[in-house]
Length: 355
Image 1 (cartoon, one colour):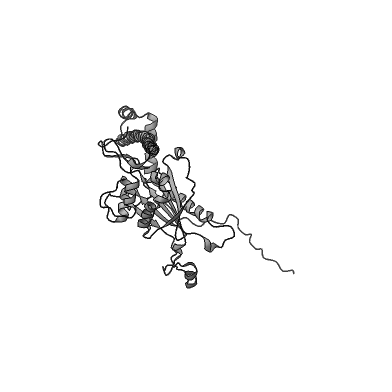
Image 2 (cartoon, helix red, strand yellow):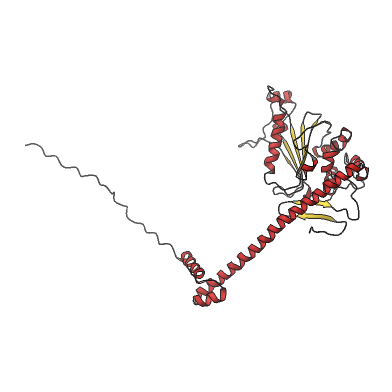
């Protein structure tokens, strides 16, 4: 069974591989739909662009205007989508491509995957015969509900920076390149990555970006939140304002998330229990072997040791041999004489002069 902590508390399914958090709806129905479902169903509509623009503007610290939604590989049938990934590709007013991915399940190679996705976006949007100067800037935003890598922060930004090996200076664009591309650094050309580790957030909104992270984690917008786009989200993502068909679809989606969490707990929980049991058996065996070695060192008979520990005579003899091989000192090194050559040159014979 899944762990419950009160009727209105948060359902937490936690393993070493993933953490999935969902609010329960036992006595207090959730007022807002989750951001992942909104991205898949609601935010693709142009009338709702301002919600997505608000989130991107707060994260990127820029006034983002979305021009269009691009087709992406995960625009698949909802029933097949399940919970593994959702993504959205948009273009903004600077002709940049922004990829938004939401990931619940743990993937060890997720870094490689976001690199691949960004690289694909670069190549897909460079038309054949175009100069490399037409390469688009790609921004990859990843909203993660599992623990990726090792770090304590909840928002990470990755850029490509060229640093000198000797002078440790950062390589910048030349004055001619700045005029051509209207940029100052190579990092403005290369893909840029944002990793939002939602579960690392401590639920304390210190700024407007934190208000968005709070919503991503808790699916709730507190009174007084002022982040751009949140008030629109509070109004339009209200579950009660969805059509009957949309509410039914959202309910199926929410049930899928709970089912997926249950499968994670069931499969991993069983493996963890089996691992604990195996560890206990191995620990017990090590204790018995350690006890048998002590008895051997005290000079007790094999029969007595076997009766007390339950080990066979063969196991005890093997322990004795291993102990002796460890204790036996290495032969002292002696500096010997240099070896004579195996083959010696024949001595030269004196030639006799003719008489």
